[in-house]
Length: 194
Ligand code: SF4
Image 1 (cartoon, rainbow, N blue to C red):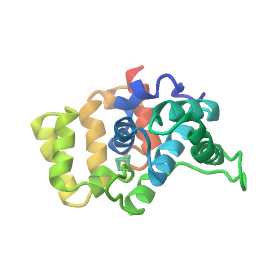
Image 2 (image 1 turned 90 degrees about the horizontal axis):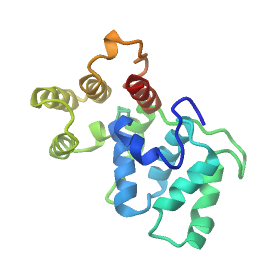
Image 3 (image 1 turned 90 degrees about the vertical axis):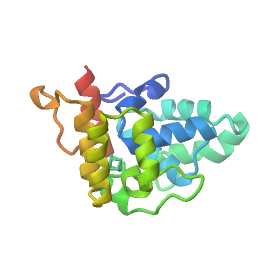
């Protein structure tokens, strides 16, 4: 396991430490009991780089993919996950997506949960999501929405971090790359809580 101590058993519990894009993927996985291709890729690589081992990734996804049988999971998805870890096919090393790749990447369509909510959600959907997750005060959410509306998606995401980790500046928590990489956001949030 990596520095964040992620295991198949604690991914669900760690979701509040994730940036909005990954929280959406986790929520989508729980709701749909599966994730479509781009979602599996975006979330799977994020989890891999957050320290989730391949064995734990297989356990984690199989446990949540209750919309398919164990046999179907092995046939249709296990290869895919091992591939992400470089254990199948070309044995390539895949790195987690950074924010610009997610923001510039293909937009989610109905039934997809990948992408960046600051970029891909419409104003109303984002506002409701921030409210439902109780992120910040009314004023904080207004500030986040203003950044979204002026297309400053990564700054909106940074603002989300700031308002939910108010003492980060006075602590020894490195916020480098928060707003540039989902894994940086996650690492900083986990370190903040420790
Ligand atoms: Fe995720 Fe980056 Fe968008 Fe934040 S700015 S929600 S970390 S893609």
